[in-house]
Amino acid sequence: MDSFRDKIVPVTVIVAAIVVIWYVAAIFMNAPYQRELNNRAHETPDLGTFIGQTWAQRKPTLPAPHQIAENFFQNTFLVKITSRRSLVYNSWVTLSSTLAGFAFGTLLGILIAVGIVHVPVLDRSLMPWIIASQTIPILAIAPMVVVVFAAIGITGLIPKALISTYLSFFPVAVGMVKGLRSPDILHLDLMHTYNASKIQTFWKLRVPASVPFLFTSMKVAVAASLVGAIVGELPTGAVAGIGAKLLAGSYYSQTIDMWSALVAGSIVAVLLVAAVGVAGRFVELRMGARP
Amino acid sequence: MNVSAASASAGNVARGANAMSSVASVVSARSLSLVFETNDGPVNALADIDLDVGKGEFVSFIGPSGCGKTTFLRVIADLEKPTSGTIHVNGMTPEQARQKRAYGYVFQAAGLFPWRTIERNVTLPLEIMGYSRAEQAERVHRTLELVNLTGFEKKFPWQLSGGMQQRASIARALAFDADLLLMDEPFGALDEIVRDHLNSQLLELWGRTDKTICFVTHSIPEAVYLSTKIVVMSPRPGRVTDVIHSTLPKERPLDIRETPEFLDIAHRVRDGLRAGHSYED
Image (cartoon, rainbow over all chains, first blue to last red):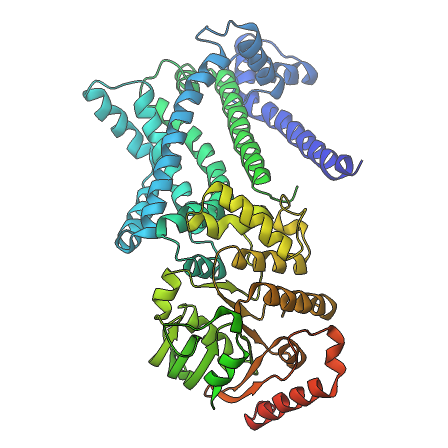
C-alpha cells in the first residue's frame, strides 16, 4: 500500500505528463510539413482530422508515442529474431560488444586500481593520464579506433568492445582505488599485529572491503559500456546493432525507426544496470550485509 | 621502584625456573621516550618510562587522556616506534616479537570484519598464521567457549550486541598462542552492567590461561578490580607517576569492590592521579 502511494502514483503521474506533453509537441513539430502536404493535395481538413494527421505521418519530425510503440512492438515481437529488422537481433549485436567491453574494462579498471594502491609511483603518475583520457570526446576517438583496426584487418566486435572498454575502465578504476583504500586504520593495525603479508592484507581485508565500491562503479561502467558500443557502431558502417539502426534511420529519415532503436537501447541499459545491481545485492548478502 | 622482583614473586611459580633470565620479564622498558612531531610542535607522548611487566601479571595502565597509556601499548605492539630508550618484549625488540606473533591485541572497538561470521573472524589470525583447517576449527571452538559465545559461530557481527562483539574480538586475540594480551580500553564503549560482567569473565579467563595482560583503562574501579599491578600515568609529558601492587587475592568476586582493602588501593590510585595533576585544567 505504501509502495503504491510512494512510488506508483508519482511515477504514473510523471509518465502521463510526459506523454501528454509529447503528443502536444508532436502536433506543433509535425504541423508545418502536414500543412504543406495538405496544400499540395488541396485539402483543408478540420482541426481534429489535422491533429490526427500530424500523429500519423510516415516520416514525422517527432513521432507520436503510439507510433514508436507500434514500430517497437512490430520489430521486437512480430519480426523473426534472425531478421535484420529485428530489434532483438540488433540489441543482441550491441549487447555482445557491450558485455565484452564491460568485462575487459572492469578487469582493466581493477588492475589499474591495484597498481595505484600498491605502487606509489603509479599513484602519482597514472591518475592524471586516466583523468585526461576521459576528457577526450569518445566521438573523436571512436572512428580512429575503428579505422586503425580495420587497417590491420580486425573488424566487428573487437574495435567496438575496445571503445566500450575505454569508457568503462574509468569508473571502475576510480571506485576501486577508493574501495581498496577504504579499510579502517584499526583493521590495518590489526593485520599488522598479526604480521600479515601485503598479499594477505590485500586478499583478506582490502578486497572484501572494496566489494561495495566495485558494484557501485560497475553500475556506472556498464551503462558507459553500452554508450561506447553504440557510438562504436556509428562510424563503422556497421550493418547491425542499435547504433547501425540509428545511423540507417538518420540516412533515410526513418525517425520512427530511430526512436524505437533508442527505446531498445534504453531497455538494454536498464536491464544491464539492474542485473549488476542484483548481482551486487546477492554478493553483499553472501558477505553478511543486513537484509 | 623495584617492580621486577615483586612481579616475579607474584608470577606463576608452577612454571618453574626460567633459564633465560633470572626475572621472567615479558615487557621491559628503559628510559623510553616518544615524541610526536605535529603541526603545533612536538608532543611528548612518553617521557623516560622505566617499567617491567612480569610473566603472568595483570597490569593496568590508568591515567587521563593524553597520558600516553595507549601509546605505550602501541609501542609494545610495534604500532609506534619509540624516539629514544629501549624496550624489549619477551627479550626481543617489539618488531621481532610482532613477527613471532608474541601478543594478541584487543582494540577499543571490536573491529570485527563485517563480511565475516564470528567463527571466520576468529579464524582470521589463524588463516594468516597458516594453521591447518582442523586446528582452526578446534581453536575456534575452544576460544569461543572461553568467552561464552558458543552457538554464535555462524552469526555476522551486526547480529550481536556490543558486548558480545567485544568478546568475539577477545576470542580472536586468544585464538593463537600468544602469551601476552594487550587490551586498549576494550570495555570503554560498553555500559557498566555489561562491563562488570566482562570484567569478571576476563579475570576468570586470565586465571585459567596464565597469560600476561596489559590493560589500558581510565576507570579506577576497573583497574583495581582486575590488576595485580596498577601503573598510574599522567600527561604532558606522558610519564609514570606511581606503580601500585595489588594485595587483593587472585580470586575476586564482584563484591570485593566494597571491601576496605579494595577502597584503600583505589584511594592510592586516586592519590597517584592527583599527584600527576590529572585532575587539574
